[in-house]
Image (cartoon, rainbow, N blue to C red; front, side):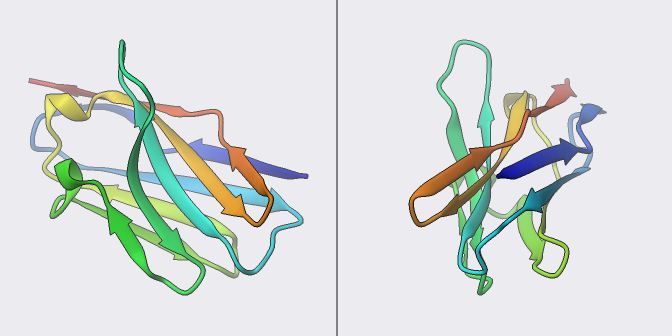
Length: 115
């Protein structure tokens, strides 16, 4: 079993920064993809960024140049550095881990960006 726990969300003014963390525990394959998704009120959950166990990254267009995803394989932790935040970034952010045949989600952490 795998558990994912997010932290680092909060309230911030437009133009500010936040750093999200997601710590994974349990039996985790060394070959996997970890990522961040978000869900705003009235919208479906959408991809923010992903990173493979080898370090390859992928970003959704709205966050390119502003957000950076990284990971610490030894600690099974993934991070999301969010800069130049906009009100449209307001959402619940969820951590995700995908391996062959399995997928896991964290409980989510609220990010609110005020104008």
